[in-house]
Amino acid sequence: MSTQETADSPAARDADQRRQRGREAFRDVMTVDPPEDSSPATDVLLEGVFAEVWTRPALRRRDRRFVTLACVADADVEQEIVEHVYAALNSGDVTITEMREAVLHFAVYAGWPKASRFDGIVDKQWERIHRERGIPVPAREPLLPLTTASDPEARLAGGEQSFRDINCLAFSPNRDNPFQGAGILNFVFGEMWLRPGLGMKERRLITLACVAFQDAPTPILSHVYAALASREVSFTEMDELIRHIAVYCGWPKASHLNHAVTEVKPRVLAEWQTEHAPTGQEQP
Image 1 (cartoon, rainbow, N blue to C red):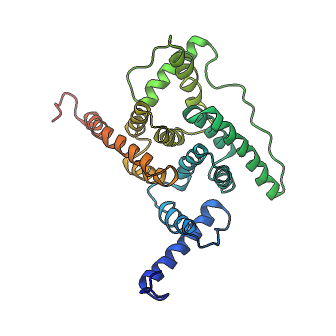
Image 2 (image 1 turned 60 degrees about the horizontal axis):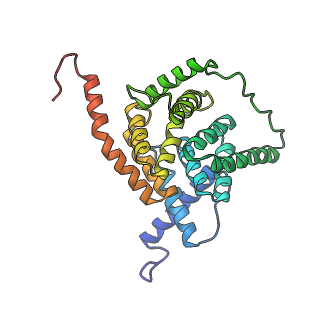
Image 3 (image 1 turned 135 degrees about the horizontal axis):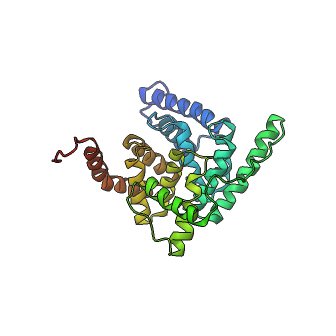
């Protein structure tokens, strides 16, 4: 506070109110009491991240969970992963089935070593929550039977159709390339994206966060396009997701994602216009 600002000044009162909002939001989101120190980092955490970002209505708290989980799992800071996994599960915003599916989805788009750490933390926090509540940990859901085809040809064909549907494209990759056939078609789109434990929108959000911090040019454009073209993520939600990623991954990553949205937006809007045009009418 500057020498011109007193405890009763409008600026001071606004700061106090913002900090109180941040403390309440922190408690609501993280399911624990907020930090008590007055360090600059805590000031930004409470007055910025929680008072001004998590409380914004354009993206639901549950949706923000999936974006945040991907970001902190990628950051490799164990305490942040622990805190956000615990909060997501303890709040009831994310079920244990959804959380474990989120780990698998993250593994594909961010890497298995990082996902291995993420997975171990999920197990420990799930046990912690039940220990705190004094109840036993439920048995895991059985993996089998799988809901996807077991026949290799049917599985690849299903993966090709899933690839086209999810990416909003008229084509699919060459199945005779091992990376594309065995990896993308057989597993990623023939199995993972189709697993019932996590919804399509939640998978979109995790994927968008992952391609944002991975910086690979083709995946970021293709997944931004698909999320918007499918209408599973609105332009308003995408803008809010970018803001959230700026907080948890950094402004340069968010700026890169924003450029990708700017690039694909005209294409998406033009396609939507064509969809709603009367048959045979020429588009301007």
